[in-house]
Length: 525
Image 1 (tube, rainbow, N blue to C red):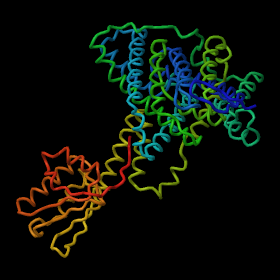
Image 2: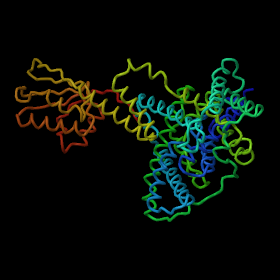
Image 3: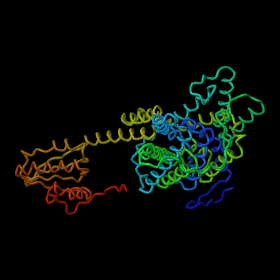
């Protein structure tokens, strides 16, 4: 039955059964992920579970992308490793409880920075992220999700030095994983009444329980029993030195969280053919992180894996995220005994299928069709994401490489069509953007000494972009002036004329002639 579900600014059709079942599936998948990421950061499992609940419920209600799931993430957990290392270096005797207080303070500060970014509407900067960067980011995440599951094939997934499973133990675990993957792949081809992921988890749970199969469970990783997230005001010295210590890590957490959240938002937008609100999501992420820090959580951001589970299960509204967060808390408070018995094989198979679905296989087919520079960007972003686990750095490097390639390509496109009219006036019709990368080629187009006494430089097909371009025009007009020749700058777009007007101490604006010409300028606001 389809009904309307209203919450704040949202009014859309909701299939309650789909939303509830999808939210339940996501909640089951969140448990081991939250525990694993908390352990990765060297924190208590409950800090990850509390973060998953708080991040999930707040962003589900206030976020800019219905259907997107947020929680404790590996990208954020990796940042805390650096902070913890510094704290232990400063004080080798520091306890885990004291470290946790610094983590909470860092999360709160990161949330404040994210809210500021949202209020300043910096979400629009995501349009500057090229598609090859998104491909690389997504492929890198898919590989990370897959590699994170490999530890489950060892005798102790919490010990990085544990040996691989062998014999019957390995065959049993692999068999259960393959059955899980088969159900998730095959069930939607038969029916979509119930989510395939939830069905797979329940089937594997039933097989293990009724046939008394010995295999690793969630409880083998850590206990998930707890109460409602307790309020905690970070107990640490409130000094300038403390701020200097945690601010860089808070900035990285804020940056990584926004990048991963907004890229996940864009991916979900493409799948659902709808449009989320990036700035609203940034404010929601910041609010969630602040509350997470005060309620004993390690913070987090959007989770691409769980978001894809949710969307692939048919969820499209806020209800699924709310159900997932509430059920996660219910599991922690009342159902920890049952959740701890869930076979890790089922959850491992689920996450492997998520990694397969996350990977942009289409990007491999474009290797012979895409420009080599785009392929380089995609590969570099993937490698940085996989080996450094630094999503912010990966995206930043990708954007920088793409921007440099774009600037180089455009620098070579500056052209000048030259002719002398019947009055003996020489015309230079400029084609292509005039900016820092093209100023040298631009200057070489002019023959100042051999030109006639009057010259017209026509910018009808060009634009003056930056300070380097203004300086290039200044030097050019000075050269003509010293040679006793007159120069006219014509057909400048309104934004170009404004640049030159603001630089009237550099260029004689009286040389500019453009009585009627107008061109269309894109509004990038």
